Image 1 (spheres, rainbow, N blue to C red):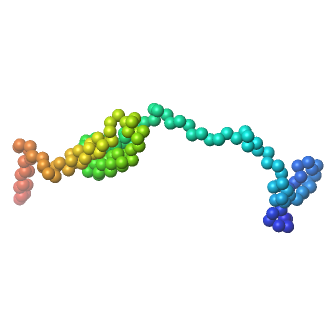
Image 2 (tube, one colour):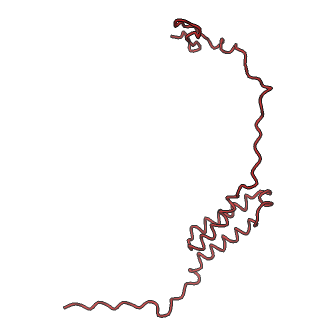
Image 3 (cartoon, rainbow, N blue to C red):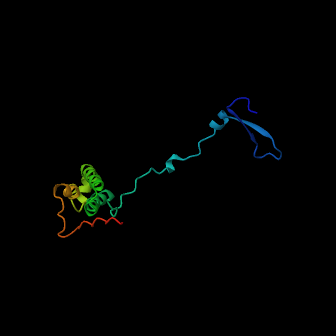
Length: 141
Protein backbone atom coordinates (compact mmCIF):
# COMPACT_ATOMS: atom_id res chain seq x y z
CA UNK A 1 0.00 0.00 0.00
CA UNK A 2 1.46 3.41 -0.91
CA UNK A 3 2.62 5.61 1.90
CA UNK A 4 1.30 8.73 0.18
CA UNK A 5 -0.96 9.34 -2.82
CA UNK A 6 2.08 10.46 -4.85
CA UNK A 7 3.78 7.07 -4.71
CA UNK A 8 3.00 4.24 -7.11
CA UNK A 9 4.06 0.63 -6.64
CA UNK A 10 4.81 -1.41 -9.74
CA UNK A 11 6.13 -4.79 -10.65
CA UNK A 12 9.65 -4.31 -11.95
CA UNK A 13 9.71 -5.24 -15.68
CA UNK A 14 13.02 -7.17 -15.52
CA UNK A 15 12.12 -9.12 -12.45
CA UNK A 16 12.25 -12.91 -12.58
CA UNK A 17 9.99 -12.97 -9.58
CA UNK A 18 7.48 -10.41 -8.55
CA UNK A 19 9.51 -7.64 -6.95
CA UNK A 20 7.88 -4.33 -6.18
CA UNK A 21 9.66 -1.12 -6.94
CA UNK A 22 8.45 2.20 -5.67
CA UNK A 23 8.03 5.03 -8.22
CA UNK A 24 7.21 8.51 -7.12
CA UNK A 25 5.93 11.45 -9.11
CA UNK A 26 9.43 12.92 -9.07
CA UNK A 27 10.85 9.80 -10.74
CA UNK A 28 8.32 10.03 -13.54
CA UNK A 29 8.76 13.76 -14.06
CA UNK A 30 12.53 13.59 -14.22
CA UNK A 31 12.50 11.43 -17.36
CA UNK A 32 13.43 13.17 -20.57
CA UNK A 33 10.61 14.20 -22.91
CA UNK A 34 11.11 12.02 -25.97
CA UNK A 35 8.91 14.05 -28.31
CA UNK A 36 10.67 15.98 -31.07
CA UNK A 37 9.07 19.33 -31.63
CA UNK A 38 10.90 19.85 -34.91
CA UNK A 39 8.87 16.97 -36.38
CA UNK A 40 5.52 18.46 -35.34
CA UNK A 41 3.27 19.45 -38.24
CA UNK A 42 0.86 22.32 -37.57
CA UNK A 43 -2.81 21.76 -38.42
CA UNK A 44 -4.03 23.41 -41.61
CA UNK A 45 -7.74 23.43 -42.33
CA UNK A 46 -8.51 21.77 -45.68
CA UNK A 47 -9.96 24.04 -48.36
CA UNK A 48 -13.71 23.99 -48.82
CA UNK A 49 -15.03 21.98 -51.73
CA UNK A 50 -16.60 24.04 -54.50
CA UNK A 51 -19.32 21.43 -55.00
CA UNK A 52 -20.75 21.77 -51.49
CA UNK A 53 -24.44 22.50 -51.86
CA UNK A 54 -25.84 25.43 -49.93
CA UNK A 55 -28.48 23.67 -47.85
CA UNK A 56 -29.91 26.86 -46.38
CA UNK A 57 -30.50 28.30 -49.85
CA UNK A 58 -32.19 25.11 -50.95
CA UNK A 59 -34.49 25.03 -47.93
CA UNK A 60 -35.37 28.72 -48.16
CA UNK A 61 -36.45 28.29 -51.78
CA UNK A 62 -38.35 24.98 -51.45
CA UNK A 63 -40.28 25.66 -48.25
CA UNK A 64 -42.38 28.48 -49.76
CA UNK A 65 -43.36 26.16 -52.61
CA UNK A 66 -44.39 23.49 -50.13
CA UNK A 67 -46.47 26.07 -48.26
CA UNK A 68 -48.24 27.09 -51.48
CA UNK A 69 -48.93 23.51 -52.57
CA UNK A 70 -50.32 22.43 -49.22
CA UNK A 71 -51.80 25.82 -48.22
CA UNK A 72 -50.41 25.21 -44.76
CA UNK A 73 -49.98 28.44 -42.80
CA UNK A 74 -47.42 26.98 -40.40
CA UNK A 75 -45.10 25.94 -43.23
CA UNK A 76 -45.56 29.42 -44.73
CA UNK A 77 -44.48 31.16 -41.53
CA UNK A 78 -41.54 28.81 -41.05
CA UNK A 79 -40.51 29.45 -44.66
CA UNK A 80 -40.72 33.21 -44.11
CA UNK A 81 -38.60 33.15 -40.94
CA UNK A 82 -36.10 30.72 -42.47
CA UNK A 83 -35.65 32.72 -45.68
CA UNK A 84 -35.34 35.96 -43.71
CA UNK A 85 -32.59 34.43 -41.56
CA UNK A 86 -30.85 33.14 -44.67
CA UNK A 87 -30.98 36.57 -46.29
CA UNK A 88 -29.71 38.41 -43.21
CA UNK A 89 -26.96 35.87 -42.54
CA UNK A 90 -25.65 35.78 -46.10
CA UNK A 91 -21.90 36.26 -46.50
CA UNK A 92 -20.20 38.03 -49.37
CA UNK A 93 -18.88 34.71 -50.70
CA UNK A 94 -22.39 33.26 -50.72
CA UNK A 95 -23.60 36.34 -52.59
CA UNK A 96 -20.99 35.76 -55.28
CA UNK A 97 -21.72 32.04 -55.65
CA UNK A 98 -25.52 32.18 -55.41
CA UNK A 99 -27.58 31.61 -58.54
CA UNK A 100 -30.51 33.67 -57.25
CA UNK A 101 -30.39 36.55 -54.78
CA UNK A 102 -31.53 35.83 -51.23
CA UNK A 103 -34.15 38.57 -51.21
CA UNK A 104 -35.96 36.63 -53.93
CA UNK A 105 -36.55 33.75 -51.51
CA UNK A 106 -37.94 36.25 -48.97
CA UNK A 107 -40.36 37.57 -51.61
CA UNK A 108 -41.29 34.00 -52.50
CA UNK A 109 -42.08 33.23 -48.85
CA UNK A 110 -44.20 36.40 -48.56
CA UNK A 111 -46.07 35.24 -51.65
CA UNK A 112 -46.53 31.81 -50.04
CA UNK A 113 -48.02 33.49 -46.96
CA UNK A 114 -50.34 35.45 -49.22
CA UNK A 115 -51.50 32.27 -50.94
CA UNK A 116 -52.16 30.51 -47.63
CA UNK A 117 -54.22 33.43 -46.28
CA UNK A 118 -56.00 34.10 -49.58
CA UNK A 119 -59.17 32.10 -48.70
CA UNK A 120 -59.79 34.40 -45.72
CA UNK A 121 -59.90 37.54 -47.87
CA UNK A 122 -61.32 36.00 -51.05
CA UNK A 123 -63.49 33.06 -50.05
CA UNK A 124 -64.01 30.49 -52.78
CA UNK A 125 -67.35 30.63 -54.58
CA UNK A 126 -69.55 27.55 -54.29
CA UNK A 127 -69.91 25.47 -57.41
CA UNK A 128 -73.26 25.87 -59.24
CA UNK A 129 -75.64 23.08 -58.34
CA UNK A 130 -73.11 21.81 -55.89
CA UNK A 131 -74.60 20.67 -52.64
CA UNK A 132 -78.18 19.65 -52.29
CA UNK A 133 -79.62 19.22 -48.84
CA UNK A 134 -80.53 15.65 -48.08
CA UNK A 135 -84.26 15.05 -47.61
CA UNK A 136 -85.33 14.70 -44.03
CA UNK A 137 -86.12 11.18 -43.01
CA UNK A 138 -89.78 10.29 -42.92
CA UNK A 139 -91.04 9.11 -39.60
CA UNK A 140 -91.86 5.46 -39.63
CA UNK A 141 -95.25 4.37 -38.21
